[in-house]
Length: 536
Ligand code: F6P
Image (cartoon, rainbow, N blue to C red):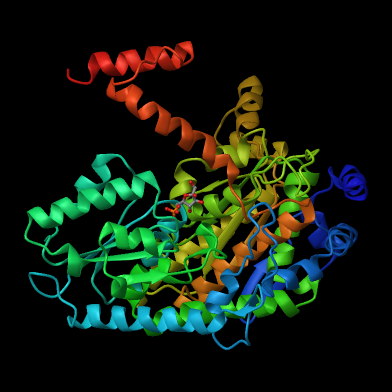
C-alpha cells in the first residue's frame, strides 16, 4: 500500500532538507497547518509536494473521512470490543445530539458534568468538609488512563491551580502510596478512586490501603471517598455512596477519558470554569479535524508525518520534546495514548500486518533532555524524528528572560538537527583551536553532525487550559488517523492482558503458598530467590 511513497523515499533520501528551503521561499508557510494561533510546522522534514500528495492519497484510500464521521457519530468502530469510541462526546459542549445504539447520550454527559461541577465547587469552597475540616488535599488513585491524564494536566495547568493540592498514586509498589500519604491529614484529605473497571489490582489495593489509613487517622471514608468508574455496582460494593460516584459509559476508552469524570481531580484543582475552557479547546480541535482540508488539518498532517517517518523512512521511534517544564508528564501520557492504541501486529480483520504499526514514543522536556540524550539524537547512527513544542509566552512575566532562552534552545535544536555540521566546518573549528595534522582529522570527525534530521514544531501563544485541550485532542486524532491508515483497531489493548493473568497466578507462588514447579526455570529460580531473601 505504500509502494509509491517508498519509491519517493528512495528518490529523495539523499536530499538535504535545507535545500528544500533554498528552493522554496514559502516552504515554512506551505508546510505548516494552523488552528487559530496554534501552528504545526512540518517543514523541517523531507516532505515535499509530491510526498505530501502521496501521503494524502492514503487518507482517501483508507476512507478516512467516512471513518472519522463514523467515530463522531457513535458507530461501534472498536470492533473487537463491540463499542463506540466517543470521547469526543464528553467535550461536545455546544454540539448537537449524539446517539449510541439509538439512544441519545449527550443529556447524560451534561448531567454528569453538572454533578462534577457541583461537587468540585463544594469541595473548593469548603462546603463539603472532611472529618477534620475543609479538604486540603486530593489523592487520585488510579493507573494508566485513570492516572496519566489528570496527573499530566494538573501539572501542565499549575498556573491555574487554585483548589486543594492534588496528588496521584498509581503504582502498586507500597512506596508510592506511603510516600504520598506521609504528611497528609487523613481527616482533611479526599480520596478519588479512579478506575473504569473498578477491578484493576493496583488501584483496588491502593484504595483499600488509603481507606485503612484514613480510618486509623480519624478521617471518614464515607465522606472522604469518591469514585469514578463505569462499574457503579462495584463502587457501591466498595462502600462509596452513590452521590459521590461519577459514572461514565464504556464508549470512553481509558486512555481517552480525561475529558469526563476521570478529570475530576483536574476540575477540583483548576475549577469548573477552567475545566470547561479545557473541554472547549478540545472541541475546537474536533471541529477543525472534522472540517479542515487534509493538507491544512493538524491531526492529519501530524499523523501523515508520523507515517512518513515510521512506515516509509523506517525510523523506529519518535521523541516528544516539550519545551515546557509543566508538560513533563506529557511524554508518559502520549506513550500510553500512542503505544497502547497503535502498538498492534494484526489488522482489524485479524490478518497479520506486514509492517510495524506504531513507533516507540519517548521524550522529556527541554532543555533538560539536551543535557542527557540529545547527543544520540544529533550524532547517533539511528535517526529519531523529533516533535518539539513550545509556547511563545510563559506564565512568569518577571522571568521573561528565562522564556526567551527556552525558546532559543528549542528553535536551535531543530535548526541544528536539520543543518548539521559538515566535516570541513568541523576541521576549521579544530584548526582554530590549534590542532593540526592527523590529530586535526581525528578531532574533526568527532565534531561532525550529519544533520538532515527531521523534526516538527508545535507552537502556540501560551499553555492555557484551552490550549492544553487542543494539544491533547490533536494527539488523540493523530493516533486515530494513523490507525485508520494502517487498518488497525486503535481502541482495544489486548496486549496488556497476559501479564495481568500471569501476575494473578504468580501471587500465591510469591507468597509461598503454591509451588513454582510448573513455572519455567528462570521464573522458578527467581521465586526461590525472593522466598530466600524476603525476610532478610
Ligand atoms: O492495563 C491497561 C489498562 O486497561 C488501561 O487501558 C487503563 O487505562 C488502565 O489499565 C486502568 O484501567 P482502569 O481504569 O479500569 O483501572
